[in-house]
Length: 229
Image (cartoon, rainbow, N blue to C red; front, top):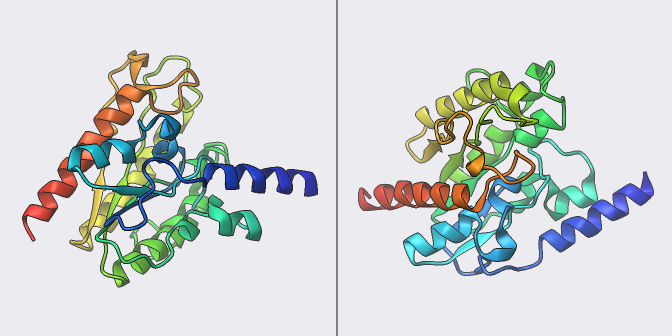
């Protein structure tokens, strides 16, 4: 267990090293898991694309494998617990991904109701995810919560998680309905059935093509919201 913890801490610290999408004075912060972190090393992550589309820096603190519910204190404080990636920053926007690892790794898409409810209750009124969003909103930032890619139905290990993903994102949408400063952006319909080009070789994480399209969509949401303020 100690060896595992040390390896996890080392991996977390490596993943947290500054990248090209790391800008300390940015007004947009991205936090979350591998959906946001993927392709970061090649400047092709979702956050990188948002930065290019908006022509402004986006700080990306996301870490692959991070969860909403995470109990190990040291690696959790280093970013494996997604809420620790937000440090009370004075920003205009926080883009969040998270929850997929809690369901896929935490309960294996099997009897996940208890874990899902610990993140966000059916009425979106309580839960660790709700606490994070409310903490960010209390600092004046708007929140854009990004949904997950769906399986194309072709040799994907996340195919069995479809029902859980739908239920989880329905709660996220309800959370957004309760606060005009919270936005939920679904990408559930992005992947055509049988089209493997939106996923990497593992059929879980986004391809560069998918990251590019998602980043463009997120940038449009932010640009549209900014124009109405």
